[in-house]
Length: 330
Image (cartoon, rainbow, N blue to C red; front, side, top):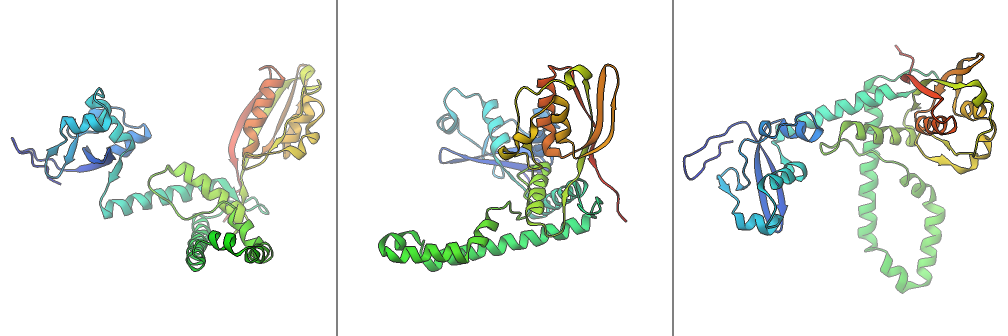
């Protein structure tokens, strides 16, 4: 892209635009390609390496800078130009070409697949799946999500919104509710599960991989479970034998707590710690210290760490030996 300024013509190449609409006006800044994402992810910290020109434009392609009066109306009369540029850079929409967009989407897609493939296992064999199998399973969920969305659109169009007819029809609403309860109960329950519709370029691969794992675990297009963490927990022997101060709910793989399991956590501090460990690999008690090495669900790690730190007043330790224990498959 070439930027033509009215006075002393400036030609810039390798330009990426970041665009923002504020106060009914559209503003743009000219940045170097690939630097915007590096800035937003924290890799690049020098603003001079991101901006081609420290100016705000109405149209970068025409070289039209934004009038000071417009900027004052949109961002506030006392807002410095540098703060305006930073707001557009951090919150604006990055304009990329079709080819770049596809390349970026493809890059995020493969990154998400790699993360998921490294975190999930077959619960029966404890072996990891290939990236191809994970990709196929997610594609199946994405297709199901698109079909569900299309079905909802057709249903809403057919019923004209549904809600007004129920209020006006009185008895008709009752039969509709009964039909929903009997005929669509399972469908509604399934709709409430985490869904997957594919990757986007506006969110990090890590957060999208977490969504993908939740959807795979909820829908089980292939048998999957989170790979477990391998931890070493140590605690002074005299403290391990003490009664836990208060029961705490056990954390599940999704990070939620089950209040019904509080009673299971009662007992000594040692008993409570072992309640989080799914499989014990090694356990040893010496004169001064009790130690256990075992496997724990990732969702229970933070709760366990908080419990050990709180109950032992910092004298106990939780050490991560392996973030995700898996068995490599063929």
